[in-house]
Length: 142
Image (spheres, rainbow, N blue to C red):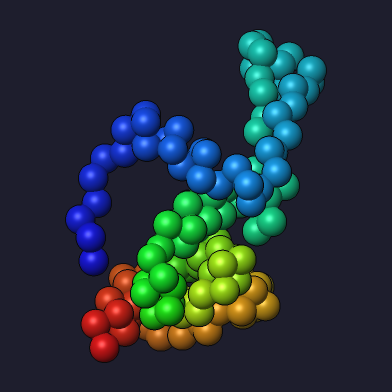
């Protein structure tokens, strides 16, 4: 597993270019009632309009789109309780990559079904996210 580093502004711009072909821009709307409620101009970025209903799909696409051919052949493994798993599953399907998502046995059944519907194998084990993370790391090293 590669070491993570703090992203730079250039990294953010690069990621935006990388995912642009795969996602429509999400709407940015202003609501007068919300402005009045908080006493300021408020804008709502509707990330719920993304294919998985969450912003995390951006990260999934950015990651999977950058995998080498060898990495794509091996597939991806992630630990998640829901939205991240959906994003990885969506991106894996988009790029023809197999995905295994490790989630706790108590994960939201709707999220689990969504990950499966997106083509991921979902492994349910343990009671907490930390159990899922350990399980994903174990599977990645097998």
